[in-house]
Length: 294
Picture (cartoon, rainbow, N blue to C red):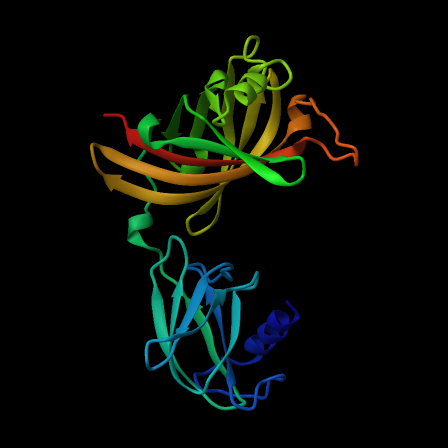
């Protein structure tokens, strides 16, 4: 992080040029360092872009992600290298760099262009395709292993508006469809100790804001209602574009983490060392495909 700030200050004083070098310890005597800063189409630093460096023999010699300031730095063998940069929602771009022994080669600023295939879905109502949509979860068991499960029955739709940030997401999940592969455990999860499906047969999610973070990354905020209690949830969402197959489809991948206490799911047994049988949080993943209603 400190290196990123130092490089950033030097970049503001004068533009970097390919092949420009300065000592940047610690650099191996038989190698050199290579750096670049990646920006989006609005010239904002782009974190988590993937940078891959390949030598003349097409052998990968370095790979990594840009930091929070969009910087990437690697130590490689001297010679001519191809540098490829990719990020979700953007077109791949590449350049060449000549790395010299015990020297620093600064490629400078690289601006990525938006990928036309990542265009947002058209306005309208997009209904979840239940055959190609999954909601999975992972919970910790006795502080050692992880229990994996899923909800098998759900309904949902996305009402796309302009601008896209005004769109709405609505999801309804059949609580009794929970499935971890063990009947006794599933029956317990359906009981009043956990989901209480007799009194609260469904879980509901309603979005209240969509925020684009960068490229194909979005934050979907809303309220999840479970056991009759509602609590704010943030879905970290990767937009996967649109395709034509049995209709016009769009897709996304979402993750979030839920705290059981937020929904009064407080059942617990403790081991002799005070370790809970069930962990306090549950990791949730969603893979969604939705079809545009004609």
